[in-house]
Image (cartoon, rainbow, N blue to C red; front, side, top):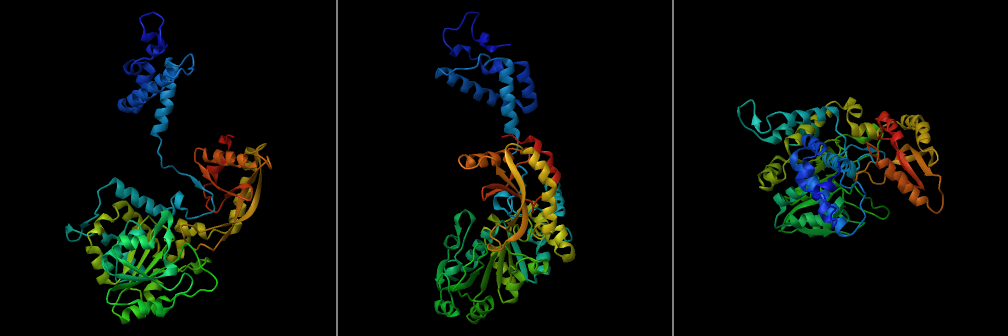
Length: 480
């Protein structure tokens, strides 16, 4: 059936515009009524209006339209494609083969099964988020995780907000508003998204007092800067970059002793903190909150979704009186986490109580400690199928490479790994375009595959690939 005939009373239209049917007539077509039943009348009506408006604009602009532009089959087909695409979630699973384990753009830490189950429970049922089951009265949501954080870190108290930037902001606003906070010039870091320590400090209402130089800061620099307006001393762990060469930094223990001699608190921002000694797992060392507390820190902040391997959160641990002041800040409510974040974090923290099995049960640690030989075997297994899928387009070879931890953690350390290097057959002129097409083809797969371009090849680092079948089964869907 063609709708061009619906616009006139049996006579040929004198202008193109009358050939456009009304919204109601399109909605009453049998195949479009079926779409309404599947997707809902409101969204289908909107899609019809948009499509007809586009066709009207093309006619008005004297643009050529297909002869069957208003045929029922064509209209229904276009509408179904659009409605289906609009229903697809924007947040989708992908295969992270970039070689960056904690990739900020790809969701950072993968949660363990225990945490996923806990999130599902919290999301689908009523739960005691702020209810004391023992006393039958209102409770504090921090009570769900504070005992675990105290047990694992040895801290007197703890609280949680939505990320580490918020943790630093809340601590500074609670303890240093309208006062001076002293920090080394070499530690004025910028994290992703152009968030900078000086900016956070200014928004928190503190006056930044930077001391020392970019590469060298001494204890006397801090001592000379302390005055009656000083609120605290701050040390920021430069987790996302490293200054090498002629350098000097003040140890945490020395800063703690100096702060305490002036009755000032000493705060450490660890950024991507870990709750285990990574050297025990054959990884580069990263300072832990426990190290900072042992050195005399009164307050330590760190992330929950980086090396800790949990949900996005900013964790504050330290002296009971300081945590109490922070929790009384009205901004604490604005920055608090929801029930699903707490459920996931509690489940992850429970895993840390069993350190012997942590490297198996916690995905972040499992991927970071994955044996190189295992990664190479995966590469050798996948290589023939990958080569067949790319025949005539590119050559595939197993290549040694290096992964990185990511999310600002241990920036100069690399982990040996193996990748599938996809090199376009086209060399020289046109090679860059060919690489982009290969990248795009992998991103267009049902489960998008995200790799990286390196040395003229599209590289798929297999360190994070645990679902081998998921990749192999969709290779036949590659289109170039």
